[in-house]
Image (cartoon, rainbow, N blue to C red; front, side, top):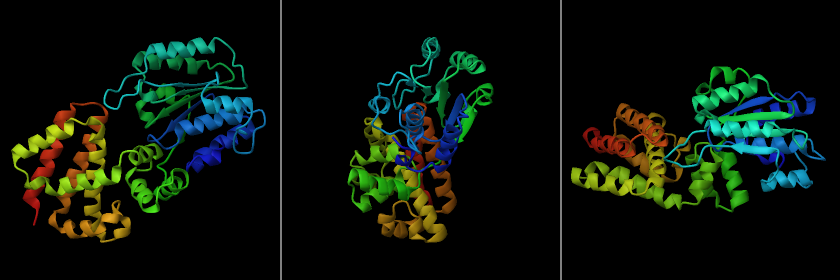
Length: 335
């Protein structure tokens, strides 16, 4: 894998390539950015570059034994530590995870560098964080630690102070659309809609691509428009139905937030090129004047807060009920 294979993140690539070329590689990095922006991919590319038997100017050759092992996921000196993956039941990185790292550090790397990635490092327990801090205080040679986080502020300050922070930024929608067309065979229109909905995350774009997302998006927007006409009994029945499929909750909220954002943009600028749902601009233009701007902003912010609460598994039913009631009461501000 070469650095050029990774979409965007030119700043991060430049820093890592410079460090590799000079041989002055920090013992620990913090890769900071939202999910799906290339943090794990760049960690893998760095591991290949540092350990490849015939490295190229921007990455491993991809064909030597080491590169093939890294690509196949069975290279002993590339390790990813992560909490158990569960969208609505986030787990923690425990002291046992850090003890496993200690065990690995008891042996010298078999390659030039061992790279240990702690994914979602902000999920380390206090005990795990303190144990990992002790590793950073006396880092063993030829070991590189990469902590993937959304925001460094969620780590112990004493950990942050011992790491070089590299920011990862949302991937431009146009680059994601180009990649989806080239690598996944999507038609241009579909790729552009998904790229604008995924908020700069390639992994989110791939997830949406596999969910028949465009059809569901239109259904959810129609539901948003019709919601204020429901009776309260119908509203509660709909809430029960939505809660049955928890895997779609965040997608629904993302669509609703994007739709409200488009209504706000249309009211403020009337510029269709700025819309997320550009293919539905005729609907946005028609409906925007139904709503009061300030109320739309408030509801959009509440939906964003709901997304964060659901991601942290905070009483999903109550959170969704509040959102539905917010949308229901938009009827009182329609013209």
